[in-house]
Length: 77
Image (tube, rainbow, N blue to C red; front, side, top):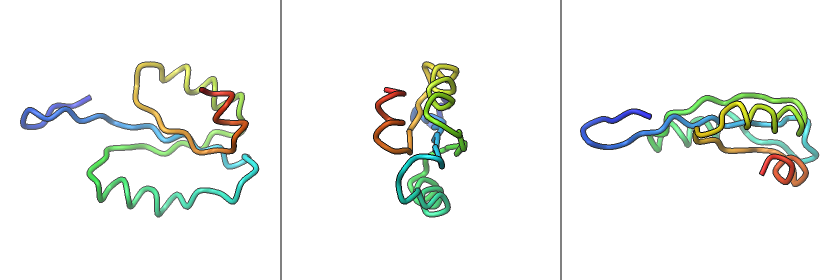
């Protein structure tokens, strides 16, 4: 978390499971949209729902966004 001119800014971690059963996330487009909105972020590729759940636990207390299929999201949340 960073404060700039009184504003609180968070650094987001976007966890993407490329193995999820879906069409896929357009990561360059997502990164561009986040940058255009002024959202500080990192995008991490995490293979498999169980690995994504472990990574989300490691990042506890930090803002994260998840990209995956229904199973991935259900397991992590």
